[in-house]
Image (cartoon, rainbow, N blue to C red; front, side, top):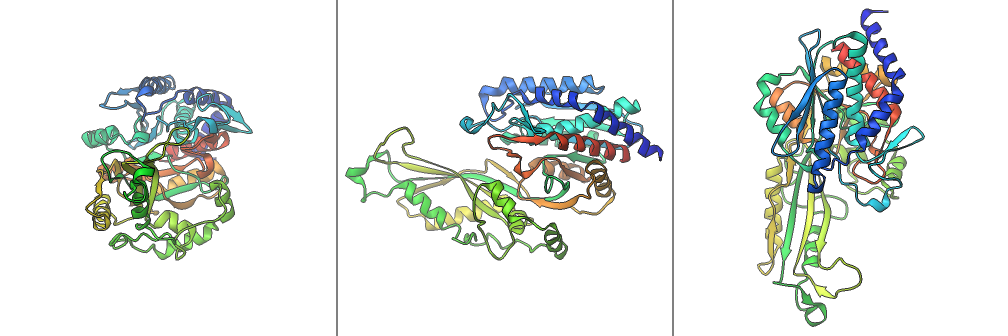
Length: 458
């Protein structure tokens, strides 16, 4: 056995031997309701950050909090035996827990059933984040020092669109200067197949509000003679996308490039299971542009979605009114060559062109935006992480793109121009952002082993 494999095997044994303790620590980590988007949980976010920084100190790292205008950044670092430097990213904040009534167990009282841990943040992103922390612990405890310099940067604003970490990276890029960045805020392909994500969609999130009258009106006195803003808003949204899923906004697709031949071949090799996909979605039929396969629609084609509709009376019982205004929360997922600001301009131009003068139309500035990004699947770092995932999971990883967006990935790439490695450890079916979010303990352990192998081989 080579010296390298001997070091990796020692780390693997440590992870296996300490699995029960790792799960107990993760349970404590998940108990913090670190909901960054709600002011009422600001204290919980700070408490969670302090717990995480203290945990990093306990495993042998220098650690602390970087105070920001928003929530603190948790950092932890240790010098290694080589000149290489790896930044490991994650986020300790979580999505809101509502609707509470759909949770089978309390979202911040972690519950383990059949090797799965259920809690808000289990898969997004505390469980995957913790796998890397345990990987580093295993190397410190079995080798005495790390093979390379490690810097953990864990943010508390990912789920609320904050910019504290991206600002920090820009301000300190010369001193940070990593050789690679590793994160696990993406997913495996399926429960048995690890994945390296090489493409993320861009994001544009905004609101549309239409106002037709100064105040709510009696629907019996004015109904049929006064334009209802909720109906009108639905009508103009329906004009943005047709029944086949094609977006009808002029110019929307102008800069969209077809995917490369090897990507089409790769998608075919993945043998996407539509039935499993429908089961995960809780529906009976796929929908969308029939010119493209389901994975092509999700990974490589832009989308326009309504995320929420707000208008009129929503209390118990009936209130027969014509509301004075209606609002739609919307988002677009974008692909390479599409600029979020340019797309927002196209949307504004189109909606203004179909909106009569009698209706007041307002479109907000972006609440959040990110450019799409696609990475090269070649290079030594990708080869090393591929080897590491195969060692950890016992299966050759596949290359995937995703319909999701991770704005901080763009910040890492734009500031450092070094490989950003997206090592998926959770599953798309883990219920991130949904009730009953969960994460496989086996995936955490295998992820920790993969991470330890990668760091040792860096």
